[in-house]
Image 1 (cartoon, rainbow, N blue to C red):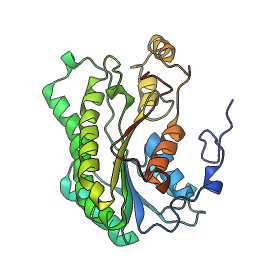
Image 2 (image 1 turned 60 degrees about the horizontal axis):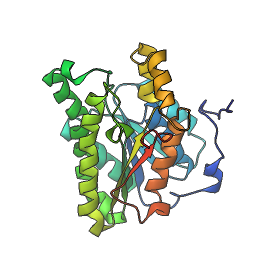
Image 3 (image 1 turned 45 degrees about the horizontal axis):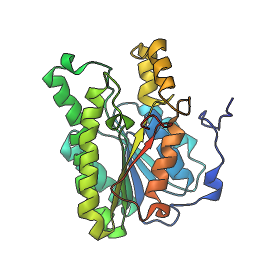
Image 4 (image 1 turned 180 degrees about the horizontal axis):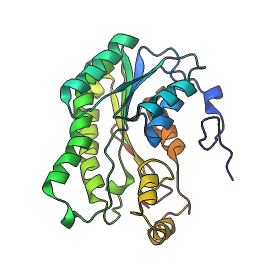
Amino acid sequence: MRCVDRYGVPARLNWGALVNDFAGRTGAAVVTGGSGGIGAAIVRMLAERGSDVLFTYRSNRDAADSIIAQLSDLNVRVVAIPADLVDESIAASVVSTAAAEFGGIHTLVHAAGPHVTQIHLSRVEPSAYRAQIEGEAVAFFNVVQPALEHLRKVGGSIVAVTTAATRRYPVRDGLSSGTKGAVEAVVRALAAEEGRFGVRANCVGPGMLTDGMAARLMASGDLDDAALEVTMRNIPLRKFGDAVDIAEAVCFLASDRADFITGQMLDIDGGYGV
């Protein structure tokens, strides 16, 4: 059994004590969806590795306050603000607030997104698909577009958390993978267009995890024991990942250790896509 750290998440080698990737960076990292399971792990790891962080949350103020309290003993600033990123004026305000409060932005991590039920596309109403594309792709563009001028100043990085399902499709996941695929296409376009300014853009694709949306699907019964057994058999490593696995990949891609990597998709899926 894995040990857990002080946040109750699975413990790893304490890279925070060994790697200080973001210390001395100009500005802060902006993390959208920072109160969710994956987003919270990303906020924690960025802070532990030396970055000031501004993160957004939709409505869970208690979770946001808890994350800030957990990180209060670190020598960084962590700020949370509520934001509906589908509203482009609110998204732009998030970016301008981060730049003003922290003197710039060095990294944008997009980990926000609405909960998605497992449903066949034949049963998805067009209005539901429209809402999903707005919550995923439109929200991403609303925050990344105004962030570009700040990222250009420091040769910053964009990392979008999407899904491994855009490479190997699991039935009933089209409402999620279809809309996250739009985010991935925009990330590739940004990599091609913004590279001349030193800005990198990449994606991380979570596979089956024990945190975040997967945990909610298990709790709701959308993923029952039979479905989980089939999923496990399709994963070569025969285990599910967790939010810390995703945070490790995000922080690597955002760091200078990945300074020659852009336009790429890194699936963290235990080999599911093989």
